[in-house]
Length: 498
Image (cartoon, rainbow, N blue to C red; front, side, top):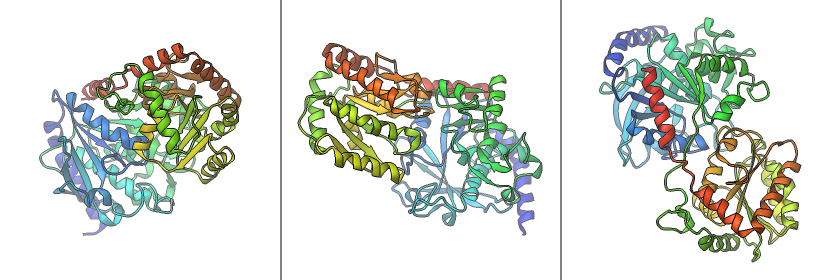
């Protein structure tokens, strides 16, 4: 059977299974939701999406029968959970067929895994090889993921479970909304934008090989300045679009923050089909403070001891001054250059800095050089370790987070639950989770370090007033950032779409 015949056969099977999908999924009090993601912290994590993909489906248990779909990376197929092969998914055009595996995590979460070793089981990250070069066939890899989601919504794959709703996340999954449309699958989809700056752009010549109709390459479709945009496909074809904070949902409808999609996003907002749902964090954050019960009581009782331990591990001098933390990807978006510029002000005022993270070489080199110039005052570790990050949150007094834009951000929430007050640019999720002067410090201009330096001075003044500092810490630690509220909002959204 040639490729065209295989594609026709797949489309016929989808049409045949369509009625079964509705009979088995839609209309249930607890909707069946397939959470589609390129990364998940249980197995492979590159950024915040991996953390969200591990936490949100679990938090949804009260509101939906939520399961995860992820590519079969080496870390998964060679991992500790046994994989049961439950079905096959046909190819389309140049997209190959694949197997569908199913595993069950220790807490009962069901994860579906795409089985096509030559496509997914490679050394590297979901997005790049071990040298950091983007995968040359990224279009095919994530088209396969997106197509699989649409096919499962049509009843293919696992004969015992058909999703009623697809929940798509960022550009690697966004084409699923398009495939639902092009294959005639009548199932709703939610498209969540975690970072609009990454859109999945590919040449127009890829259309046929990906099974995208020529007519879809239009302004009202997948075309973006002469290229095929995976993310635009998701935004345009999805039943509903969400993003990860209310402020970011407003920002992306404007020219300066919309990355060229502001017009489309503004239109979706006018339709009432775009909203922000703030991410959460794990319930156990804050336990690293040393309080076995996790209660935010008497932060002054443990903060100093944790600070001393962090200073020792980073080779800093003994000090009673404030300890500032940088826990970040070292990239332009995160404003690392602004933190480096503000460092002299911090150090001259008696403060110290610990920094951990990795990213662009120019920023890694710059922050290492900062440590060389200020031995005993600046400690640097290029890389990232979760346990070390928790210790820094627990030991630091302030977190430097001058992101130029921040869709949601999790770091500022982790910091507050650990009594480290964030100093952040008033943007996106930072504006939605930090109370200026009460749980942290916000500034309005990320064009230069002056505004950050002014906020640092405000923080230093609070540090000098122990009563005010402890009151701010207590308030920050008492905030509820748990996943229950966002999961409930997503649950209501799924119900409305069904």
